[in-house]
Length: 257
Image (tube, rainbow, N blue to C red; front, side):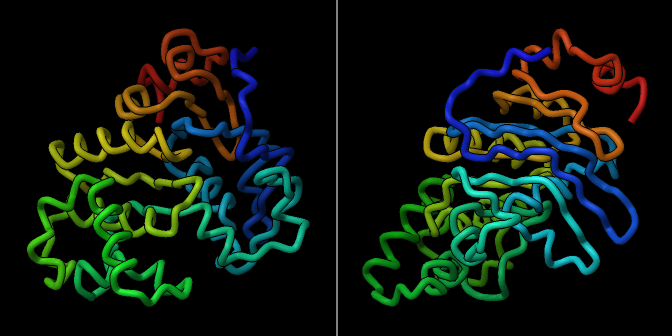
């Protein structure tokens, strides 16, 4: 069924079920995520894509009435059953949301937020981390002369890159991106896609996207979700050229969704 490689897994999700109250939203999900790869998750609205990635750093637990069964193994430890330090987990598994959500503070203070939460106070060290993170997201040259200006004054694309920089300051291993370009214009979208390609050298990335062209451009693996089920997960070239399941073919070719 699958041509998935057996390189080391940062996440190994086994038989994951998730309920919102009495509604079964994720059904027996088995999903390996490999180090230093980009995995794209596609599927129609309401199919469980965003729900699934929010399980990977347990942000889903912030929603009342959520229950889960199965295993979410991160670095070999099941974060559903073992005692988990949520601060440490979310430091290692960062998240970028659909719309850039900078804090109503300066550009500098936005990027400094994570290191300060983790106890870093030395200005020189903060300066170095902030510069490196902004360089990593190709924003340093655009903002280095106005770090004390309000982050809300940045364009939509710049705000999204700032939020990615903010996620990178804690040196995560995994970056979760929930439709990071859906609110952006084509030029800003292209910059974020280039950025994902570069960040893959240092990070494992999981991206939820409605844009199938984007999935085919940026990802190594693609997963197709439908009505809470993982229908197919394979190398991106195979999913888009020779999908195993007819439902995947129908979705990719625009017959539904």
